[in-house]
Image (cartoon, rainbow, N blue to C red; front, side, top):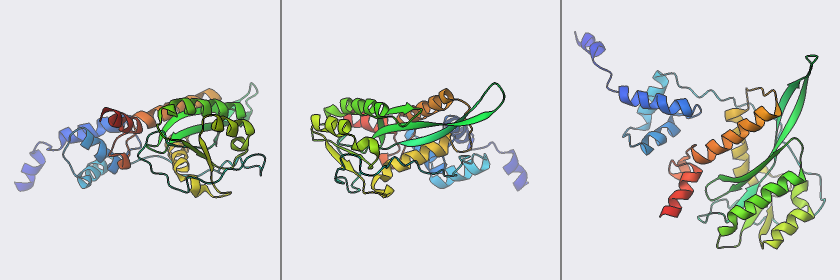
Amino acid sequence: MYWQKRFDRENPDKELEDKILEIHENNKNYGYRRMYGELRNQEFIVNKKKVQRIMQKLSLQVTSFTRKSRKYSSYKGKVGTVAPNRIRRRFNTHIPHQKITTDTTEFKYYEVDSKGHMTMHKLYLDPFMDMYNSEIVSFGIDKHPSAVNIMSALNKAIEITSDCPYRRTFHSDQGWAYQMKVYSHRLKEERIFQSMSRKGNCHDNSVMENFFGLLKQEIYYGVVYYSYEDLKNAIERYIKYYNEQRIKEKLGWLSPAQYRLRLLAA
């Protein structure tokens, strides 16, 4: 009789399970920790272990692929100005728009011609990130490594961060584009410090490397894109989602944009 009563009892976690399913529908890559954070934001009182148990029960495992691709390198030797490493891995700041970092990464996509032959092409992403809240403040996308693309994203980042009351620092690796005279001159025009990672040391810009890893894990690895536009649109959608919806534990379970707006409202 004891077990019969247990089986007949209404599920006490029905409301919580429904909410977890609803959150998972829009956030397929949320593990139990991030799910716990979102539930907390929505004023559900629950502990992490229970969230983990329910997600296992509902078979809500994260399905992202973790395969790594060869890292794109824009280093071509000393072709222009090499700036000192002013950041020196001090990525944290409590001042919005004070420390900005950038890098370039590549993606592959495929196109099928009229004869059924498939050819591989590449797409290049150039984002600028605010180290204050890891928000992508601007970015450019092109079919080739492009100085025009990088300068366009740079100019937008300069404009967006111009409200910073302190002198800004823009950090990058030693890629050819960041050594260009036009790039360094544009920063000097705005009295912005230029900073560069040491040669061959990806840890000097690990915050951007982490973003590239998340982006590729959540929308790229395990997926084949058959046109430039499809891949470009997927990246643009992800950046909007990352900025506005994807919560981070270090930001108090807020998204980068929510964290910034909370500061402005304080």
